[in-house]
Image 1 (cartoon, rainbow, N blue to C red):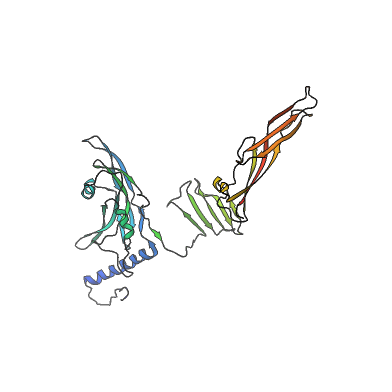
Image 2: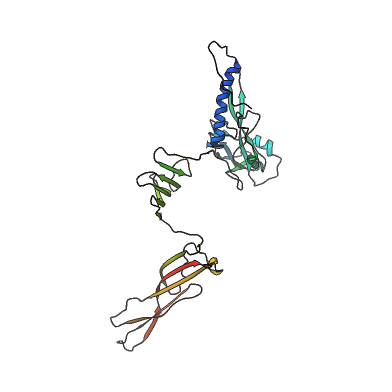
Length: 361
């Protein structure tokens, strides 16, 4: 099999329509291969399903009008699909496909596919919006890309791009949803083994625009270099939650959690009053303690409150922790100068230290 054929022209050559078409075809094929093998197919921008509330004049029932917003998708053959203006979905076309179904709350898939509109000297690279039957969203994963040297698919060959789902009630659209179970629209991506930032800072974020409160991962080559995970602030900067410095030091704003490996220790400490339940170290569950996977080591030190007078004596009568980690602390107070002299016992407080280790270590 030969490789792609690039048209070559000579002086004085008479060009036929096939020669000019070959020039266009060569460029389209190169662009399609770029999209197929350096990118992941899917929605590149826009193409969201939006709703407008409406009322049926005959029944006075409320329903929604569903529209596909402008945007761009690249299908699995490398072909661009451009929707230049909002498109209102046709209820009549939906009924042609699914009108015989019994009422259901399950969502129906909405697809976008390429559709050419041939003219005398131009071909409009258009699109078609299709309604699927229940469960047809699974067809998206079954589509196979063309051969390496193939040009983008030409209609009537179809590549389905899932836009979302609609719900249907009493002859009208009732709502839209972005997913059905675990299936949702696929978005365009990139295939790369190396990603280089020309500015010296590389940022990964979950939205196409900076949004306050959304997470980001920032790799900075500044002096000193660092790797920061955090949340965007209103100013557009990232508030660090975790920072890895150039020397390997790790700074975390929160706490670690997870299983305890052999030889490691998780710790929590603080002050507790009589009757309180001591907390477990972060990352340790009561189930792990109950079944012996984690062993607890608890140390408590009683705290004596300031005496009411210079002659008042205070001593801890009890400072213990039971099997449920509940604190028992009682402090006895005695003033030998007072008449009549008596011993008063009151609830007290302890400073605690809880160590958690691997039960099998």
